[in-house]
Image (cartoon, rainbow, N blue to C red; front, top):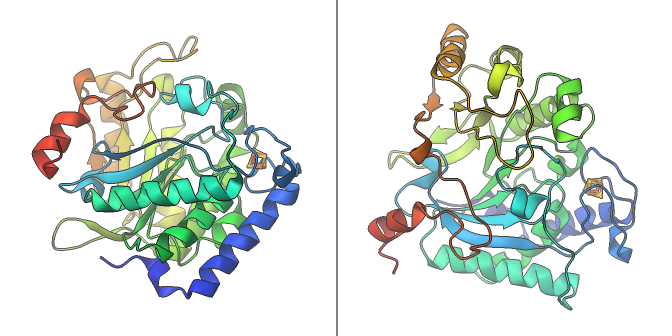
Length: 337
Ligand code: SF4
């Protein structure tokens, strides 16, 4: 598989990275638009400077089958986040991270991430996955530019919470092969109350429309692996807090029912949830969402088991293997010891 960024000239990729980096000077990289100068060490909502911090870089087998294949996605789990979900299953790295104490320059941090991507490619990963990348797109582009010069050639998956700024996404046109957004909420007040962000539905829908414009619906090759395109996720929440019907209507009517849809049952009441988020979703709630998707004519549905054991909750204190259930899979499928 040939990554889209390989078709850009070296100068074009460097230019994209620099244009993105310049947004750090009065940061509007994501919809918070904090206006701080991250190149001078200032921080906004996400708490990050221009240093690219990665909490863990491992092959992961928990994504949808066309992304996982036999050898997994080489994920870079980025530190911090531009959302602050009360129930975040990655809260150890998204919210409880500590300020960097290491004496590393931004340039060195981009090089470190570039080497991590190359290692994942050498391990056989089918794709590089940028996980929760919205607040560090400039750093990731700088890093990609370096990695390509060192021989990186596998496609990029942009695995996002959907809270992305349009001008930032436009710089990724021709760079990202697969967009994997989770459309989380249909109502602004809910997003504000649970994830502490403003105008989530407006920003995330604009973002997904732009992703669709860039890559269209996900295409899958004869080998069963994804080639290019958009796959939308939707995490169900108890008591339909997420607003599933409205979100599925948006995807079906404003995009297309040909866009593959991943309905996620994996919600677990972790971190600091309160009622009514303090329980898992029920079988009935999940079946109701599936019925909605069928009624709207979605052609490609990815569904999850309701069994808790199937949901591989991470422990990011174990940076080398934050997904313990992946280890066996890793060894069986890719021969890694
Ligand atoms: S990335 Fe978003 S949250 Fe972080 S400083 Fe920039 S605008 Fe603020």
